[in-house]
Length: 271
Image 1 (cartoon, rainbow, N blue to C red):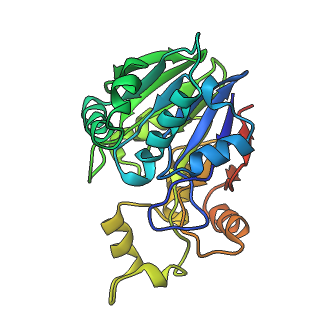
Image 2 (image 1 turned 180 degrees about the vertical axis):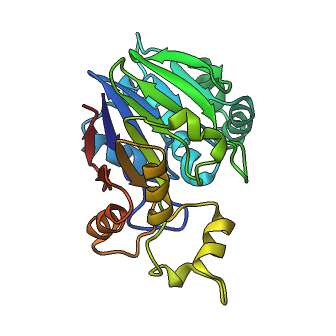
């Protein structure tokens, strides 16, 4: 099992951002979210991932930096269509799928009829396990505060990877991810270096509460408490020239396991 980070997802960042990746098993890919624009096509190509060979995609939630790139993905996949092209299996909660279908109907317009016939929509529920690309995915309601969001635990029978969305991990999921091999956690900032994103007279703690995102410190302390073996920090702001170095140094103050801070095009082997 391997994680391939595409480095797309334009919320407010312009250089460093990660809301989209693939999980790879042998030569098959499961696309997780899609970023916010056409960059997904460029970055898939740069990573030598054939778009016509991606037959499974997942939308964690309907925010623009996670779902709009899927429109470009769908259009490109249809343009490359040929006899024998496998249908696309689309996974998400009922609400996420219903909302995205509305987006497709409006923005893909006439192409929607063609696109719709090439997609199998799979509604997922909390605790449901589905085998996808030879891996078991247990889907999880992340109890997101703003909008409905799902994550999952992926298992190859030996190692497990938990993706729990891009909000602060809710205590309802603590026991679910405890002792897991690899945990992906949102980490928006370190220390007090994010003053430029704070409102006037707003503390770091107030900011994190308002945005429902974690800092490196809060994510690392939580990973230590839950006995996580490997911590993957993603979904960051882009105001750090030495982001990977700084994030790792900050995390190591509070967490004893191995820390990964993926940049664009990085790969992580789950061993």
